[in-house]
Length: 448
Image 1 (cartoon, rainbow, N blue to C red):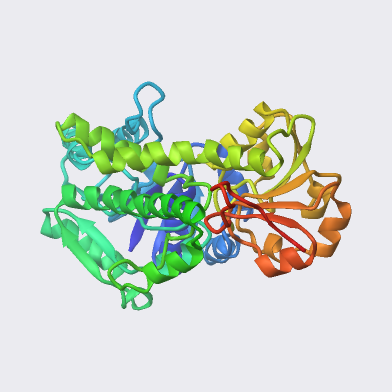
Image 2: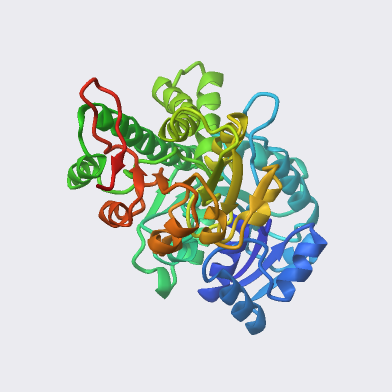
């Protein structure tokens, strides 16, 4: 089947490449000429494990191509996927739909035959209705139908998520459109996936509801971690006990500095704004947003406390800047407000991230970006783990201690082996499992 994917950002490029890899003919359309030229050369503009090899292989086979000419791309296509960004509007926090609407107008002007338009972008409820209105208002002599087909890709494992999905949601009231989109996914390599057919508005809501629920799980375990510290519990054990309950599950129960990335922050905000527009107040989700925002500043204060109440003039080594491991995505990364708060308190920041430093440099100022973790820790008064990269977990602790001014490790991801860190002679501060002192004060675990 011939498929057009409009937008070659994270979602569009991953989806388009994977569609090609399962056998379809895919044309990715983008207006960024520099990006297109790089993609034709096999240079992928984002970091996603395995994506560069997949792009190169499918482009070489002829199944995947890149262009800025939407009209030629749509010739003989059966489906066009909209995969452009929907960032929060700066004025009010609502999802900005201008890119989606612009693509809808462009498709209406350039389509040359019957076409199913599939919304892959994360959009508020009712967006499909507006896209369909735009298409039909062009009064072209052929059929249009709009489908909501939300993506559920996790950065860092997006290819595996696409190829082994736990569900494929197809939202449409049109039998013709349902058959077209079902046919795209009903191939041998995706034969084990559950396909859920639902209304378009329900499909749009499923995406937002799923992300809001997962964000709520993260926020919940972070609050439980605070309680664990207050009463002498261990959040790792509590989370494990919760996760063994099949009704809850173990995923998204890792205590840390709060959620970030391209989805949870904007999607929780968008669904709360949508609800208010319909005179519904989602108190739980609005609380999640507030608690998560507060969490980031609280983590900076934790660093301050661990350093004795003042970090003015001290050097803090930050290990990890991306919002999670295995990505270079800095969008709403907890590292941004935490680093900025540490700078507000007077600290000098040395930082390393295996993939995200180029993007971080666009957002953070007066930070010394370093070649590796040991370089970042040189002469540091404390090292702060902000992203759960495996290379930080496996760092040589003896060498790390040797280059530091003070052997203090503040592990805000609970990434490190506590026993190994203490054995190496570090003072260790972690999340959700510090003991309390005789007067209720939080204590650091220290090597004897």
